[in-house]
Length: 331
Image 1 (spheres, rainbow, N blue to C red):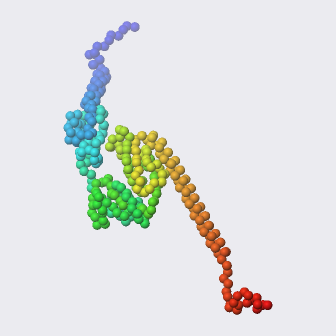
Image 2 (image 1 turned 30 degrees about the vertical axis):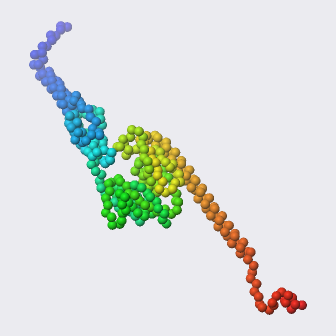
């Protein structure tokens, strides 16, 4: 069979089908190249910027650093941390070292220049639990509980703000989060049970201690926990131990950590301590009830013996002066 001669390029282009197919292939190729170029320009993968560390510096300096990296700064939140000056960046997102595209927004949390001032409610004349709740609703806490002899235990006698006694007519403001000193009544040497605070945040632990009439003493953290992470830290150790009987007004020492495994382990130990304390309290109450019952029975027994030992009264009718005269009469 004789070979057919190959068609030249010009002859192929004269074919309408081949011509249109070639045009379509060229258009698709051009479209693919244009799309790739546009994606590169839009995403700018070749122009990544490394987010600088903006924490610990004033917001104006943080903005200048961000502009040099073609990034934008947006203040997302503010906190009041006394250890820092006002306007200092406390936290950022994305964090330092992350690769981002130019124009990316970095959200920062700055330190407030001054804490918000709130009215202090008058809580004297109420129970300690009511006073605590009213102060917490106002955004305040308890600086210290000072117990004084009084007929009513855990009854708020006075409150002091900034060393000054408040009256019902006082109009006082204090920084949000600050504390009020409460003078509370105590009838005798009253004891309370140290509550379980393991597994709670610092604010939750403070509230539970105040409800039991205890003060918050020394607070420590694991090494490496910064001021912002402290809000997420949980109590891992406490002194006095959970379930311990202590005097009202005793100071409790707390240690906080971010190690959840450690918290879970010690929370189980604290639960067992609280159960043991509940058993001791139940046994003590049963023993007290038994002693009281025995005391009542003994008292009833003594009264019964006293009544049985009493002789019936003898009435003198005046007929006989004495026994000899009565004998003579019958003789």
